[in-house]
Length: 407
Image 1: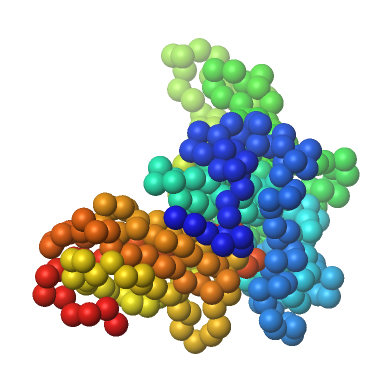
Image 2: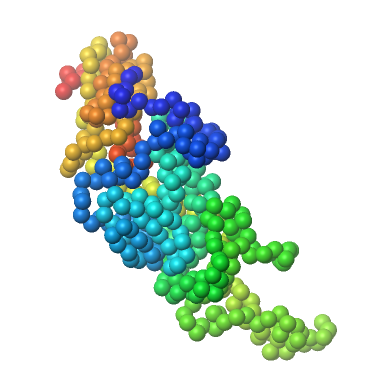
């Protein structure tokens, strides 16, 4: 099987992105620039893939994250209920939570998730990973980032904690209200040296006191979140809880004494206020992973709909070993590929002769030993310019004595 020069896979890429590639080594190589030659620049490739030069609309997750401030080279604003922001092709976008920096200089595009917020994340995604089948896939890297990358986990986790109803899903966008943003800005004004390090380990980022160790300090993220109230202004649960000293003053002197109503009311109020306050651990890492992977799945399904294979089904007679061609077709527009891989899952029946990303075609033929009722699946794996994702189509080739000639 041969590929043209546009689709050749760098051996270093294959080695580093195998299923068990060492993340620490890959990160080191990325930071030292050793992979620069085999990685496409996200900003430039995104611009090349978009022929439009007018205003564009991007989105933070397909479900949407409302309430983030954004800034591009031409526009500032706040993401709407669908997480949308405006930009021009080739621009970058910076996101903040009010005055709290979140992510900066991200190549603006139609769809973004926190898995693409840093340069290192984008580069690893562009490299891709290798499945057990030997074909390149972005999904290997998405799963790694959603499960192991601190920036990805911490940013998305915090956004989900700040969600007004804490119920983010494919049908329910993340809503960060203006009241929450105003409280964040007030906290930052009161704490001018405050900074959040999203690169902290998820455990450090979510650190909180527990009943066994009350001396444990709140993490910086939790200090901020603990200062917020998600109830209306003036609500009792937004008040400061009664101090333990005030409660102790009303505590019965002995267990035989009946607690006063005032004491019980203070205890109940303290518990209610503290229970209403949120912390990072309210959203677990598994929920973050599932949400992110669900979002990328939904977007991939949307993007791959216009693509199909021609032919879409094929039956050949035994002995019909002439060279055949399949083509990737884009419905409603011209086809442009950045990379292409084609593989036969049964090389005893069908052999791939070659393929070209430039033309979006592949040549293949039956083997001389292919017999009646044999079959083979051709996997067609392709990548679009400016998009780290790999899209997969398949063609089932059947062998049948009664098949018509190849059309």
